[in-house]
Every structure is written in structure tokens, then in C-alpha cells.
Image 1 (cartoon, chains in turn purple, red):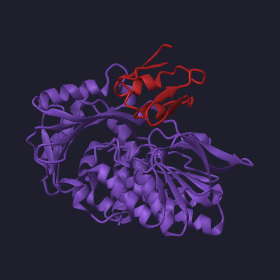
Image 2 (cartoon, rainbow over the protein chains, first blue to last red):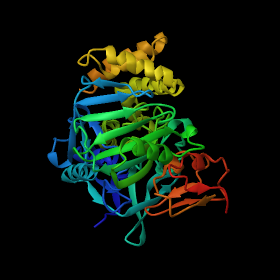
Image 3 (cartoon, rainbow over the protein chains, first blue to last red):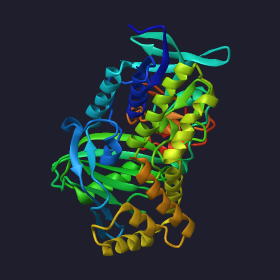
Image 4 (tube, each protein chain N blue to C red):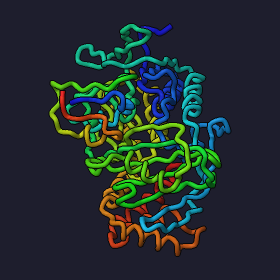
Length: 397
Length: 56
């Protein structure tokens, strides 16, 4: 039975929502989480790659949601050269539909309530303050009250807009994406591949994330403003035709990845935004799962504190963006600056970067080395990149 | 604006770039409010499958 009032209503049951729900519930808040779809984790709008270090603070590793273990990243230049990276830490390609459910189970274990097919329609206001959420559930319009709303409703976030937060991003700050899950492949299931080039994926990249030795997520993200004349699907079809002419498409998914540097405003009185909704994605990789979970842990713990202190005002909730900035703010900004830089790189420059990377011994070649080479000649950005790697290494632990 | 519902995957990419708050996504459908729409064409540009076009 849904109660009339909870301390916290979480909108969206992806990693951002379910991890917020879990930490809020674990620390004593009453939580109801609403998911628009019939199940958490579907449809899977995700390339499903995460780093080992990023994920282990949040959930015990389970073979059930690990499709492939990754140790190698291969970067492919526009002219067809390859640089191999073995020194960037282990990672996984997930089964998001199982992973997301596992995170929801953890939230439920800690006492959070969770319903699916519950489509949030609007906020409820009382005396000029957010006081609940109106949603459609089982054919009925329902209203449930709360002290805090968590907007974890993804790239298409509406919750922030209802609260008057500016969530729209520039065309330059969204990647428009298509992904096929291909079968009938013969691939190395320990390696992720990345392809760059103006004719391959302008302002973004093509990825191959293996799910087994015969299946992989093969997708593309191109910068929004460069997608006017040609859709990412057209680029991806060309890529697949050239690289995997005999593959079968098992699953197709479309989507957008925000590549902004986090929204300026992610809290207001009685509301916080988390994950894609807050644009907390790594602007250069487009990775958002670990970022969302880091933000969600901060937000969830703070929500519980807010409930105890009966403080739901923006001033109290500001601790969340402050903590986020402390942990990932510098890195987010640097990655954003890097992304802006990447947008301006010509194919010749990509070729020369990969050529440089090939000369670095494989066991010494890391993302940091790559970025440093990419921003060579820009001392300020070089310093920022170097700093952000040191900082993120310390803070992520 | 016109949405080709046979193509639309309800992914919500259009919503993120709408400066006019004119697009709503539900579980099964995307809808554009013509009264709020300022015809900036951001949604047309970013739609991964080009399911949105100008028109009634």
C-alpha cells in the first residue's frame, strides 16, 4: 500500500534514483521510488561500460550482471592505426537490466518502497513550496506528499523543469546516440574499441563494448550540433557495414548523452537532481553510471540528515553540490574543457595522437598519457588534466 | 512540429535540448506542445533517428 506521505519521493529508478533511495532509507528516511517503465533497467539506453574501481564501493560484484571483463582499450585513428591501452584499470560491460534491478533490491532491503509503471506528471505545491508529486499509476492519478523530491529522471528530466531549474543543454553539450547489440561476431571479449574521425563520428566516437566473444554493444555518439545533416544512425550503419558486414542486429536503442559539466543549479527548496537529470556525466567519455552513484550517495545521506534536522531548504541542501564539487567538480570541469578541445581536433591531429600513443610502452600507456598528448601546447589545460587525475585517484577511494 | 511515431523510440534526447519546455515524454509517447514551441529546431537536429520534422 502506498502511504499518503513519505520523507522522500525519488523519481526514476536508474542507478541515480536507486542509490539515492538506498542511502536515504539506510539512514532512516522513509522513501518511495517511482519508475515510469514496467521494470528498472529497461529499455537499456546505455553502452554498459563501467570501471572496476568506480563500481565496487556501491555493490558487491556479481557474475549475474557482468557480461564481460575488460582489461584492454584500443583507440583507432581516422587513418586506421591502433593504439592499445592496458594500464587504465579493469572494467566491466554490464547487463544493465539485471544490474539496475540489483541496485533497486539493495534500496528495498534498506527499507525503500518501489513501484513501477508510475509516471510522474507534476510537482504538488503548498504555500509556494514543493510538497509532493502527482503521478499516474494503475490507471489513476495519484498524489503523494513528501518533504523532498529527488529528480533522478534521466536525460529527459522534467522534474527539474517543474521546479524552475534550467535543465536544457546546448546542442554542443549533448551527444546524439544509436547503439546496436550485434551478434555473430568474432571478437576479443576483454577489449573495448574506440574509433575517432570526422567521417566516422564527428565530435564523438564509435564504441565496441563486448558482451561475449560473439556479441557486443556497437554504438555511436555524435555531438548534437554536428548532427544537422546526417543522423548518427547513418554513420553507424556505414561503420557496421564496413567492420561487421555479416553481423546480425539483435537490439537497437537510441538516446542522448549530456556532455555538459553538471548543471549550475541542482538543488532548490525541497528538491535535488541526481545523475543524468543533473547532467553529472563525464563530458569526455559520456560515462554516467559511476558519476550518478557518487552523486546519489551524497544526496541520499544528506536527505536523511535533512529529515532528522527537518531542514529542506536550499541552503541546507547546498551541502550536496558542495560535496559533489569537492569530489568530482574539478575533474568534471577539466573533462568538459577537454571535450571542448576534442571538438576542435582535426583528423590529422587524431592520427598524430594515436601515432604518439603507439610509441608509449603498452604498460605505461594510460588515459592520462593520452589526454596529456592531446592537450600538448596548452599548458593550462595540461596542468588541469594532470591535477584531475591525481585528484580523482585520491577521491574515488 | 510533427513526430513520426513509427520511428520515435521515446528516448527523450529532444527534451534535453528544448529551451522552451515544450516537450513531454511519457512511457509510450513523446508530445510537443505547439503553443510553447519556439521552432528553434534543436529537437529536429538531435533526434538520433530524425523522427521530428517541421509541420502540423
